Length: 153
Image (cartoon, rainbow, N blue to C red):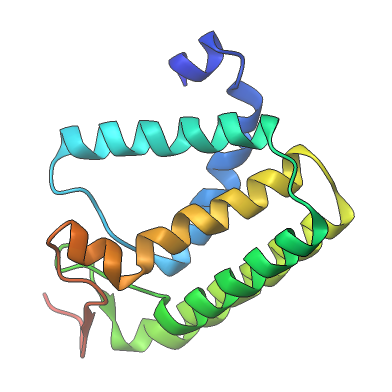
């Protein structure tokens, strides 16, 4: 937040916390292996989304195509757990439905609002889609899509 405030991106960053936080909460995804890695990757991810949200303009056809791609990714891969933060079998359907519902809601927000909100909704979905695809788990040498049959105590 300090960096975003210094470079004039605090407002978009705060909105990203809401949009990205909601979709990440229900679709889960990869996690960094160390706190330092989490800090570096997370800071870069949030600041990149904030910066791009202010400066990009996505044409309608590209916007629609990206949402279709995101919907397909979430349909296939959400929710995606990790060994440290797994998804349990009884959570899968609910989390998938909410993830897909959020994709649709974000799409409609982007059709009603242009500019910052539209960009943040789209970038949040794209960023999180990257965090749930198997390629990202493979690149980071982690096991992804972990689903446990029952709660482990």
